[in-house]
Image (cartoon, rainbow, N blue to C red):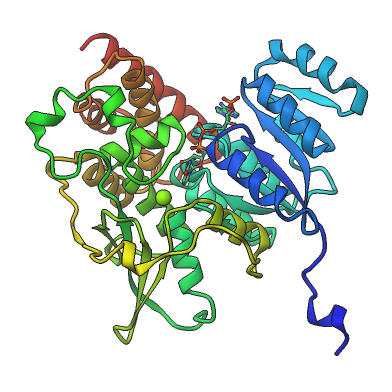
Length: 395
Ligand code: NDP
Ligand code: MG
C-alpha cells in the first residue's frame, strides 16, 4: 500500500461557513486557522457584522462573502476590492452561494429558521452539511433528512450532544439503539423555583455556567428549550422514536451524551466543554486530527453527577416533547414562537416564565398540518411569528 492510499481523505477540504461571525463560526475559523493543510475557506457569510466579516475575509481570502443586510454591502466591497473578493447581498444570494462547485462542506452556523432554505439549497447541490443550526432540523426534519438521503449527502452533527452520539455510533451501524441520553447542564437556573424564575433578568439568563455561546442559544439553555430542540434534532439525525430519547441533567458538561444499545451496554463520549472539538470532528470526518485543545483532567472533576430534568418548572422541555409527539408542523410552530419570545425577552419586553406561556398559546392556536410542504413550513413560521408578537403586545 502506498502512502497516498493509506490516507485517502487527506485532501484540502473547501468549507463554506454560513454565520462565520458568530460563536460557532469564529470557532470554526480557529479550527481552520490551525489546519491550513486540510481546510480552506470558500465562503463566509454574516447578517450585519460587516467589520468582522471584512477582517475574516482579509485573513482567509475566501472565494466570496455574503452579507445579509444589503445596506452594508458597499462598505464590504470597498474593503475587499484590492483582493478581488466578490461581495453578495441578501437571502437569495445566500441560497445560491452554497452551490458553488468548489465547496465540499457547508457549515450551517447561522441562527434560527433562516438556516432552513440555504441548508436545503446546499443539500440539493450535493454538499455535505456540518449542521450546527439545529432549528433547521426542528422545523423540517423530515424534509431535510429525506432530501439528504436522495442526494446522498452526509449531515454531520456539530451540536456537542449529537456529535457525542454520532461518535458513539461509529462502528455500530448494524446494532440497534435502545435509547439515547442527551445530557443537559441545567443552565444558570438549575434547581431554582418558579417563584425565583418569575423575576430573573436577561443578564442573569445570559450567564451560562459552562459554555460561551450566541445570545439566542444561551437563553434557550436557561429555559431548557435548547434541550427540547435537541430532542427533536436527535429524532431526525438518528431516526429514533420519542420514547427512545431521554434527557439527563449533568451539571459538569463532561459527558456529552450517551447511547444505550440493545444489550444494555452504554457508550458515552466525554471531554472538556469546548465546541471546537465537535466542529473539528464534523469538518474532518471521518478522521480525527491532532490538536492542542485543553485535555480533560479527572482530578479537576472528582464528582460527575446526574439528576432528572425538572419539566414542571422548565415547561419548555415538556412542550418540545409534546411537539415531537404531535409531529407535522408543530415543531415548526414551537420553533417560531420560541424565536419571537427569546427576542422579546432579550429586549426586556417579556418575563422569563411568560416565554413558555406564549409558546403554549401558539401551539394551541396555529392550524395543525400533518404532512407539511416547504411552503406550509414558511407559512406556519410567519403565522406563528405574527400571533406570538400579537400575544406579547397584548400581555
Ligand atoms: P451567534 O448568534 O453567535 O451567530 C449567528 C451567526 O449567524 C452570525 O454570524 C450572524 O451574523 C448570523 N445570522 C444571524 N441571523 C441571521 C439571519 N437571519 N440570516 C443569516 N445569518 C444570520 O449564534 P451561535 O454561533 O451561538 O449559534 C449558531 C447556531 O449553532 C444556532 O443554531 C445554535 O443553536 C447552534 N449551536 C451553537 C452552539 C454554540 O456553542 N454557540 C452549540 C450548539 C449549537 P451577524 O454576526 O452579522 O449577526
Ligand atoms: Mg447542544
